[in-house]
Length: 252
Length: 263
Ligand SMILES: Nc1ncnc2c1ncn2[C@@H]1O[C@H](COP(=O)(O)OP(=O)(O)OP(=O)(O)O)[C@@H](O)[C@H]1O
Ligand SMILES: [Mg+2]
Image (tube, rainbow over all chains, first blue to last red; front, side):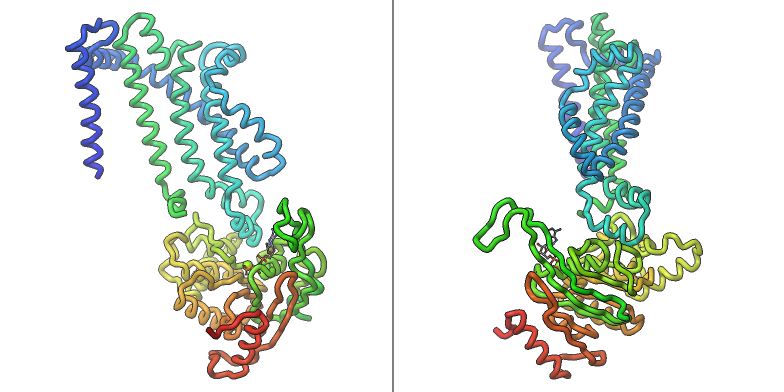
């Protein structure tokens, strides 16, 4: 099974490369419009060797991590609160439902105005992109916890903190992990866009800067790197959902 | 003084439906009486089996004794004190499984003893409870890895380990296959003979009630009150064939509930 999926993906990537190479051979593409695979590979090596790629990747990853952690730090507790307290739900839900569909990219002008240039506006945009989905999925997960578990908690004299740590958190963990996984991939989408404004580093900046220099090979190197890191992030998050702590949920 | 005294207990729920569904339905927002003047005393160490038609308010009654729900009027006294809320003195065994699915059997049973600082005593008591319900070897399994009968037994162990004053069981055998049902029933009776804990059991099965109970209580349809109460002073192991009195009581209850077991 695993072997088969490995084979299949090799075939898919090989096919893409072949199609790419074939287009170069048959079409009369200007190198500045469509560089050849070999060209891109050489540039990939060049940017790896001189450290540019690493520097930009680290910058992007740093922003995603910072924004994402902030979103987790504020979003999950707020989601638990909204899920548990009916009044809070009635008060805040309409607001969140209204803000949620606004793309983080629409916040770019305000983010730059409020946070100036540098990492801060980018981190803020990532935060926004993860915060609302996390609040919503956490609160939905909390309000759908089987009420019997809260009665068990009351029956065994759980303190308020024990209700949170022994009932709510383990009960919502599987759903929250799924939400985290989606948030990370959205955050990774957003960081590239955010880096096209206001910063001098990151993979988004690399792409924008290379376009201005008409180096499509560097643009493609940037894209490949974004794809690879995105894949890696998703793999890590998927790992998380297979931990023992959420094993029970797969049987419900 | 009886351990549990239920006096003139009334409970009604507000009708949440927005439309009447027929000429005899309740109006939206109207109070629907569920329990109407329920009176019942349970002695220390007694096992009382409660029967009644579906929807008559048996679970509601148990939930109020456990403190999960408030009565509309009337009194529930436990050892002379009114019930104010859930405590680990009265443990409720749920109609569906109340085991926490993210904890192993051991961790679930440990819930009631988590404040105990003496580790050795804790381990010993957990082991004792687990072996009482015959679950040795399943300590590290999660609820989803247990069969239906094992789940009920694990929940029973979790209830017993805190040594509650009162054990409250809502349909503990529903959903079990026939043989597991019989085996569990026998285990609960044996356990009760052994520890003599005050126990309230709601069941749908007349035979369960007749074979297990020190006393049997039959409730009427909604709005519900106690329709029949009988002490069953027969030694265990009981057998319906052996006791003609039980058999005629069985007929009487079937008649009372408006059904017949003869087809
Ligand atoms: N929270 C509630 N709000 C409104 N009505 C309720 C509520 N809980 C129970 N009821 C109503 O009270 C009545 C009694 O319910 P209860 O669950 O106590 O019945 P039961 O005798 O345990 O039934 P069963 O044998 O099917 O378990 C039912 O008609 C039910 O619709
Ligand atoms: Mg019930």
